[in-house]
Amino acid sequence: MTGRRGYYTADEVRAAEAELFTRVPAGMPMRRAAFGLATVVVDELRSRTGGVVGRTVGLLVGSGDNGGDVLWAGAILRRRGVAVVAVLLNPARAHAEGLAALRAAGGRVVDRLGTVDVVIDGIVGISGKGPLRPAAAEMVAAVDAPIVAADLPSGVDPDTGAIDGPAVRAQVTVAFGAYKPVHALAAASCGRIVLVPIGLRLPEPGSVQLDPAEVGAGWPVPGPFDDKYSQGVTGVCAGSAKYPGAGVLCTGAAVAATSGMVRYAGSDTEVLEKFPEVVAAPSISETGRVQAWVFGPGAGTDAQARERLEMLLATDLPVLVDADGLTILAHEPELVRGRAAPTVLTPHAGEFARLTGTPVGADRVGAVRELAASWNVTVLLKGRTTVVAAPGGPALVNDAGGSWAATAGSGDVLSGVIAALLAAGRTPAWSAAAGARAHALAADLAAHAGQAAGAPVSAWPLLEHIRPAVRVLRELGGG
Image (cartoon, rainbow, N blue to C red):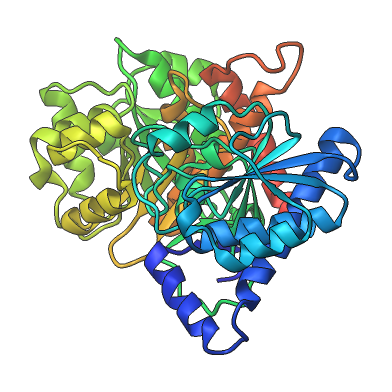
């Protein structure tokens, strides 16, 4: 799976660990994990305090192997000249060999951490479910130092990233052997993520994240014999007298995402005022040759809007449905269920609930897969981490790295970008995931540009940074 980061469930990792234990001496996987964890902590100490010797690291140690990893890491740190203190949350079930190693190296067991430079969270591992128990929650709440999580932040579900109560929020998470879904779905709780290989043999992942270089390498660019038609003609049916801005943003995004041509079906004169290169027609039937459509942003939900959506879905072209279009489908799902041509739905959580009749719930990946399979469509669920699923394929996740794109009109921009990729012939799932990656990068660039660096982003600056974001991705992809 070149260029992609795979995510593995707790069950898959446990199965791979069991197989590993048949190939290597007992204790070796834990030592590998502990050495990697200690190395990351040393780097943190150096970057935050300027040194290692004489610094103090606190360990929050639960039962089982996760606690053992942390105790062994503490022993390694102690031999590097770091003072190490450990709180055992369940002393009777502490990992015996790890605890002995820590004590032999000069580490101390204490009731409270006190003042430390870095804390290692080893409370629970991938077998842990639910929020932190009261004693652990109290300990974590009292921490006033950066936290490095061992494998995952305790209190966060390893498979869904759900947080149902008190949980650790780490500055760094050291993933042992494999990335888990939590590392994408709860990235804000994980902080920076470092993978430490321990020799696992893993199956094909059920969830993956596209590498920016892969996105850049696959982004459509004109070849020596291309013309405006062969590069992809994007049709846009968006905006209305009530919401003219939605049409402007969606159309502008299709232009910025390097469509060979963008055709606009509607009477919104603001679209042409902003983008004179767009070819406009008053209706869908008069639009001309199009290779993919986007429908919905600001389009309305009246009878005329419904008729336009039905007309587009009756074609054999790829159609992306967003915003008002999703509201129409929530009332009439038969318009799209079972459609043979590619269809992409891009709901936020509220729209998803209207489409399915139930909230997304804790398992976002499972919910998106179920909708994609039952309706035979590709679904992109919006959020800081977007989740994309198409029938039969792996889920594609994209952590935006922040919430700069959480702004009105942002979804209109995303729809236009994805539609441009569909028009260029890219697959629906790849188009959705790659569009989300470019959209997130554009939001980040917009947030840190000019005199307003660090200020909230509005949709227009985000749109203006789509093209620079694509350029960055292309450079990463070798283009």
